[in-house]
Length: 253
Ligand code: 3PY
Image (tube, rainbow, N blue to C red):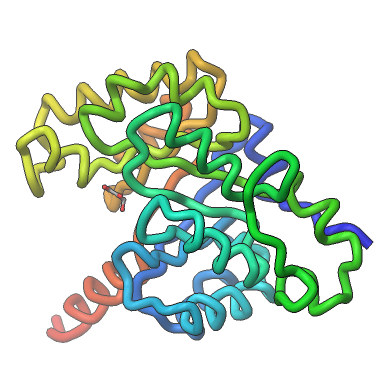
């Protein structure tokens, strides 16, 4: 039996924008709530959330019963971090701060087994193989991997055409917050130079035939990015949504 198809990866081949939510609370219950809300994907943010492997696993299991693909953002571009996450049964991963084609190529290899990659083989004991219930895991896992690389610095934007040309990269995701910081405008997401750089980056990614991704907490900005061709779109985070709803509910009219 092969690995179940990665529906997010397949959908990214089409025109429809795949809409997702960031998970930063570390809660399996909030992951389940988000997954059942109809998002195409939910991103377990192990770069900026309170996640060890057990917390990631709990959210992966919570999302498994929903229609949302579990995407895990690892804290850094490290093979061993990807290996541990993939062994949990994750097929879609985001990697922050990718700044060169060589780095992107190394990541493509990190999520694939030999001979096409360098992923260590532990699938006989891993959750990924259904603890043996998916006997063809080793032969079929590579094809379902969805690799999302983040470009979020001036160095990354300078190398963008080369990064986009790397086969095996499914989505090139612009990180607006880190990009603004790297450009000297920390926490100033509305800075015109940053917005212009993002627009140019989206155009470059689309022209290269890759899927552009981005996140915004502003619904109008999200719609504009979708209309511009973004096809992997983060529209919010569980932590921000909870915070704003809790504040809004505090005072009676
Ligand atoms: C950024 O905005 O820099 C991101 O990485 C998205 O969280």
